[in-house]
Image 1 (cartoon, helix red, strand yellow):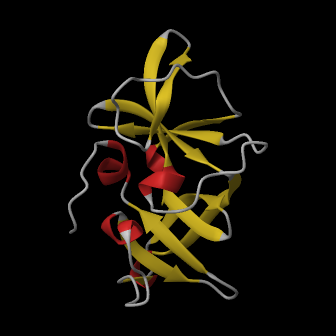
Image 2: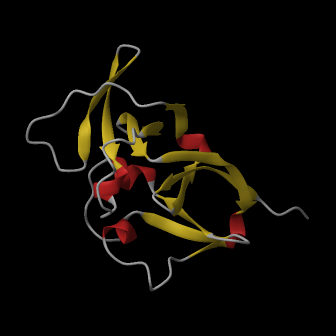
Length: 147
């Protein structure tokens, strides 16, 4: 009997190792020109033009309660699909596609606190670190309420 696996597109915010289901990732892009959105929530970095389609860019640092990015470091765009269409998640650095056993997903540890807790589906324990799996729809669609 084979054990099911899942694949995650991984990325970094500072030293945090995060991932989203690879099936939700449309593409990964370098930093893009952005148009600001007046009166938008603090985590909306702006709008990008993706080959004629307007896509909202969500900066994961403020969304997850992390300090602002150094202005000298340009963010990368992870374009994900949601029920509302594509959304760009701004991250510090792109990782790899990681395959893990589906049954290794655990609940977030009690030490995980703050806004990030609202968006973590679970944790995979890896040999040298933890991979926090994020809920794309909660991140992108504006839900700020705790699970």
